[in-house]
Image 1 (cartoon, rainbow, N blue to C red):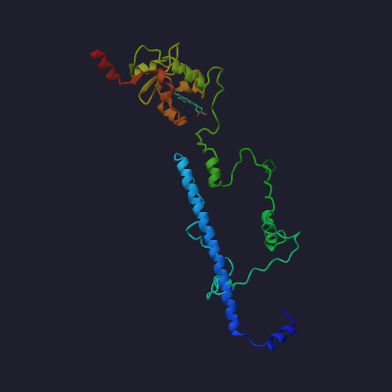
Image 2 (spheres, rainbow, N blue to C red; image 1 turned 30 degrees about the vertical axis):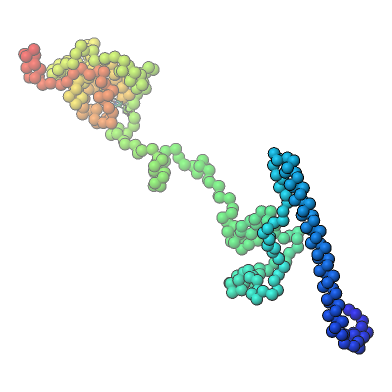
Amino acid sequence: HPPNTWRLSWALLPPPDKKQINAALQQDDDDKDKSRNKQDKADDTAMTLAVKDEEESNDDDDQKTPQATAAAPSIAVPEFNLEPDTNHSMPPPSFPAANSQQRAMPPPPKPASTPSTAPSSLMPPPAFPAPNSAQRASNSSSLMPPPSRPNRSSLGVPAIPARQPPLSATAQARAPPPRIDTPKSSSSKVKLAPGFSPLDWASLAASKNLSNVSSFTRVTPSMLAEKNGRKGNDAWSAYNGKVYNITPYAPFHPGGKGELLRAAGKDGTKLFMEVHPWVNWEGMLNSCLVGIMVSESDSEGLDAMD
Ligand code: HEM
């Protein structure tokens, strides 16, 4: 700022003469025109020389590709001003909108904690529930290990209890099927000799015919009675109309030879069904099949026809 004395001197000066001012302005315009004309002439001379040079070079070397010359761009590149437009009537948009709900909410409070204890995104999430929370305190029992199962042997459960409590559905599914008791209270199985197990019988029965007859025979009750296993004869038994030679099977019978031969020379169906109706005798004695039971008259009639 000029000192205050300058303002005072300007105020005391007489008003300038308009003629002098106009003459000074005219002189300034004449000087500008002269300098502008000089510049134009210089430009014209330069252009003429450039065109001459170009014509001469074209005459000397017509085969050469014309060189491109730098030219000022004819299209003006728009300029953008990033400065805030203070003359703009509308204020710049702001985010969030002035009437939005987000703007109405206050910013979240910053946790007032020191940098050493501030939670970081790299830190693991806190344990849930918090160690000092009331939820953890109330559920303390669920976090405890399950109670250990009582030792089975310490319960003193007998191997075969006389009476067992009712089992659950799962326990019943895993439990073995209930045992169907036979009329006999105790087992009547005998100790079989070595090489006479049920598997040995199965192997032997599958290997060959054990009927000791040449062909299927029609057996009358009198014929059956003669085959009672005595005097070195084979023992035959009838089961459901089929006659089997039971002599080969006797040493393999789990109930003993004597029990089996109780039905020798007879129909043993009733005895058989009283002891073990579940046993598949047809399958076990297939190789011992002699024939079928016929009446005495049928046998005579068939013999007459033969
Ligand atoms: C050819 C006919 C027969 C065959 C194939 C046969 C077969 C069997 C079989 C496989 C067993 C073992 C059953 C098991 O372990 O559950 C058995 C046991 C027994 N059988 Fe026979 N059997 C026959 C005839 C007879 C006859 C006629 C009697 C008696 C009159 C008899 C009396 C017995 C007895 C007492 C047992 C022992 C049952 C036990 O205490 O478990 N069986 N028999």
